[in-house]
Amino acid sequence: MTDALPARRLLLVHAHPDDEVTGTGATMAHYAASGAHVTLVTCTLGEEGEIHVPALAQLEAAQADQLGGYRIVELERACAALGVTDHRFLGGAGRYRDSGMMGLPTNDNPRAFWQADLDEAAALLLEVIREVRPQVMITYDPNGFYGHPDHIQAHRVAMRAAELAGDEGPQKIYWTAMPISVLRDGMEAFRELSDNPFADVERVEDLPFGHPDDEIAARMDGTDHYQQKVAAMRAHATQIPDNSWLYGIAGDFGGEFMGVEYFTLAKGTRGPGEGPHNWESDLFSGLGLEEPATASVPAPAQPSAAEATAR
Ligand SMILES: [Zn+2]
Image (cartoon, rainbow, N blue to C red; front, top):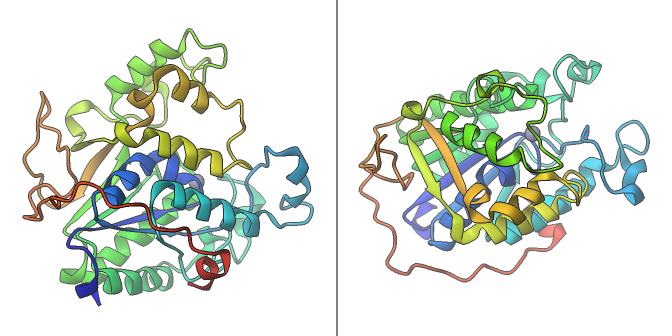
């Protein structure tokens, strides 16, 4: 099966539609454009999200409960913007429900991803791993980057599936991360913004995320793709309001903040790196899989909604 796929294969395991963009969108666009096979597995439909489009407000869980279905289309458009064609929902669309924020009654819904049987969910991901045989996998750290139950569960499921896959599993596993130095610079830069996302934060150490720079393994420079990342964010319109500070960053700092993404290495051996901390600039570094000489492949046509949901 993998004979027909490109030599470099990257798997991303995310919790909700839109998580793929904010943490890894530039990396996904970079690898898709460089001819790698990029597979995105999203674990829930994000049914419990807030809705920032007034005309769609009644789709929310407490009313029509139609947000999840709507977000399938948003995700499809985001993937098209990133040039990613292989996107799936864990166990099929609707298999697991968004658990909502930690401590809410939605955590206890029997269909919530937080309630998923770990081995059952991991077996569903294992099917994807055996089909695609990714050398590199990206997911979250054990705290799900910031503590959301579905992000924590996505971490557990991804790590369990990789363990079950054994030698067929990814050779390198990365967790999304943010270096303390970048956070600190960001907090300084944002002080001037009227819509400062860090307005209430006194010290960078008080944030629930942030890794010492020497714990970071890879710095992915996707600044060439930051416009695609912004377009993919726009595709998630119900979740990211037009006046979001994220767009403020995109406008004020361009590729610098939007296009560069960082990772810690949870499994595998670090390849050659650069700079004071020897950060890798390629997640496939050290695997003996050279970047194809053909630097860019055209983004494939967007699949129809029926095709996307039939997977
Ligand atoms: Zn999420």
